[in-house]
Length: 495
Image 1: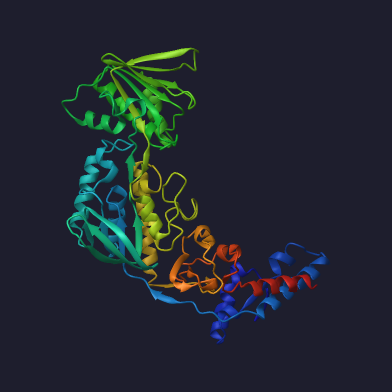
Image 2: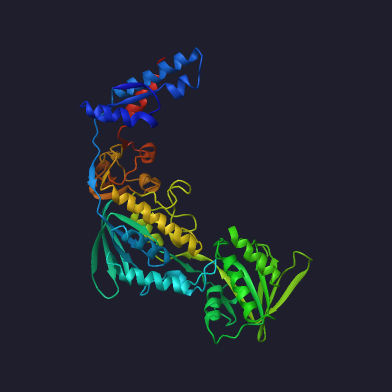
């Protein structure tokens, strides 16, 4: 059936449903868009008649080569797996459990809380310790949440909506199995601790997390001369929250020791949103800010019992020398260990900095490209606790909506491999944004080679990249096979 009318984006589903009711395979329906692409874009133009004819000829030529296809229907396992027991992971687990969904919460360490355990307050002044105690108690008491500490997912089997997960536990030599229909990745982050600026080599050079723990101690003696150095990272990356954290800690130091001197050396202050008020307050309280360029970072030197910090004075010229009895480094937040391996096993791409990459930053900000997998917290990128909580709630909501479908309909327009033509060049394996193609050694490729590409139809998203790039022409995209596309081109050019 060829329909010469409206946009397929808006009405193709309607005409396919009508074909199904009439007993015709819905994938034998072809549409020629002569409204938006012809009538609306070329009103009162005689050439529009020729364009409409070309569109119709292309549709007719392609329709003659269409094949009946069937969309596979599979039930979705009504359970969720949350990987990571930090603030984001616990929040996501609780929101899913409150919807009546069974949740397995897997945490690789022996304690819940994650990166937030070393923090005093959130950006808006809330007590982080109280928040963690409340979240931990709620998770431990919830009947729908199973908490597995010192545990790591080691293998994922199955397909989207029906995962079987092998989980290794520290107190066991074997693994346990759990099933899940949706997976929320909240693996968190870790503090960068390189040897920059004598960190790890001098006791008076510490990080902001070290300082927060010292400030929480009632026996700690506040330093009198403090220099904070921002943007301490292996590759110059910005972790977004460091400026706010440094300013908060600087104000705490000044509150505990009113006569103390605090200098913050920065490349660019990024107290975004309403956190700008913290920066303004810090300036008014006498905290001094000095900008430095990335190409000319500060230098920290030993000088007896104190430290000297030198940097170019961009305001007055020359060199600025600061004497400090404490140097505090704002170090970067890196992805947690094992994030890359976990992402690879699930087909989730990473950003250039190693964080989990979302499907679309505006339209699908908590979804992975791989179906049924969601992300939140520091695993996605560095953020404040309130942002992690909001994102965890969004990820849980998306995961719950996915599970609520009950069944998933796979698209039949997926890539298929002719193993007899495959030469095992790995082009499809390297190219696929969803990391679906694999070399299956049980298949025999071109010329009798051991192994050929295999594409899991339940995970393929039908983008067609592998089919367009395969040098051996061993891959075809169903419903858009080479013959069908070339026939449409020939039909359009026959006018």
